[in-house]
Image 1 (cartoon, helix red, strand yellow):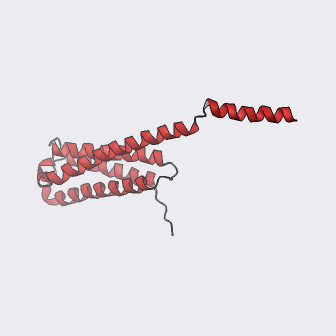
Image 2 (cartoon, helix red, strand yellow):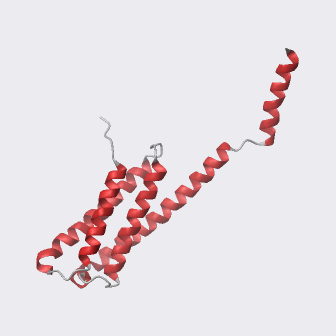
Image 3 (tube, rainbow, N blue to C red):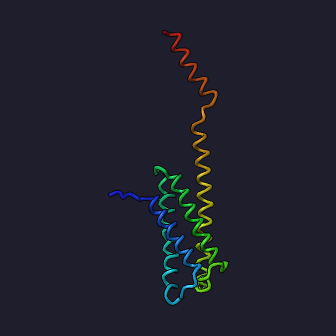
Amino acid sequence: MATRVNYDDNLFYLMTLTRALRSGLQLEIDPEYFRDKIIEDIFFIDRTLELVYEALRTNTYLINRRDHLRGLMRAKRSFADMIDEILARRAAFAEHLETFRAKLTGAREQHVADIADIRTSMESTASEDDQQTIVSQDEYRFLFEHDEDDETSE
């Protein structure tokens, strides 16, 4: 049975989680209470963005795919920016996440690479679409010759 994926709502929710998490990282909250939850949320968003990307990457005939890819790029960019804040220690809570530095760096690099891949893919499909809709002069001539031949035979 086919399932319906609500890309817009899923991406909206991930963006909302990222914004809330980013705001929370600026607070001086107690790591004993919140460290595990924050790192779980970070890795949840990371995994889910990758799953959404994989679904959009493989489903090339999806209606509104370009719009969903744009939304995914925004979500990935926001998430990568949040990780940048952690890695650069611009977030107050960042010092408590230092043990996850290598994993966060890898996640950030993956999302940045995905953004570049999405952008390249969208640019190539846009140029393919443009090429498919262009009618050459030879095609016009062929079409008009048939029309003129039909009119003279009547």
